[in-house]
Image (cartoon, rainbow, N blue to C red; front, side):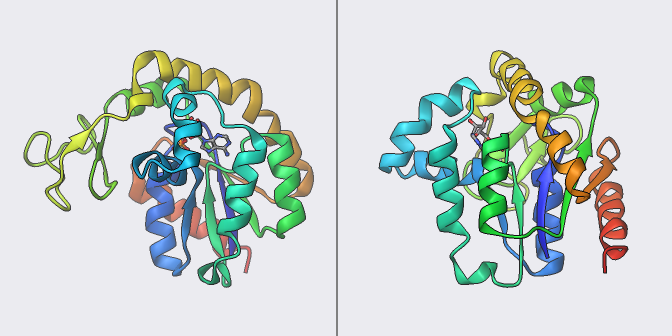
Length: 211
Ligand code: AMP
């Protein structure tokens, strides 16, 4: 199954994608994760995009599309994938349409108030990437990942200034894609406000109807 997870930053795309990808046995492909890995490994791409990610702006379409095009040639994508955080602009969506045919676009709907609360309290494991939240999913030991014992950090772009920038980038550059995908008939709206287990079952139920 070829899926796109769509929605503003903090909508829960990553959290649900990890769980659903495991359940369906398909890879979870997050362009944000791919960029962060490139930055961590100090590759040429990483050096090019570090400042852009820190500021909350979007990486240029060409770089992003090339990255995804390359990733989608890997064998593990043969039986499908979940694209998380891509596409984020109309040109990216048009490029994707030229690469593959999607089964569905899951649109996670969440109010700005909840998004800000989720993003500002988010803490990521610097080692395994597992996501905690100071209020909604606090670690058993402060600053330590429950899953692997790694150090929890706050993403550079989860600062208040970057959060505001990312939400406005979403409104201006990414939200116009809603109209684009509505026309394709692929879009499924999901209420992203409840706890992850409930959102996951809504997504699973919606996908059942596609079969
Ligand atoms: P995310 O982890 O999805 O919130 O992405 C983190 C950051 O990576 C974004 O704020 C952008 O700077 C960059 N990024 C991720 N996906 C894309 C994309 N599809 N197009 C452009 N920039 C992206």
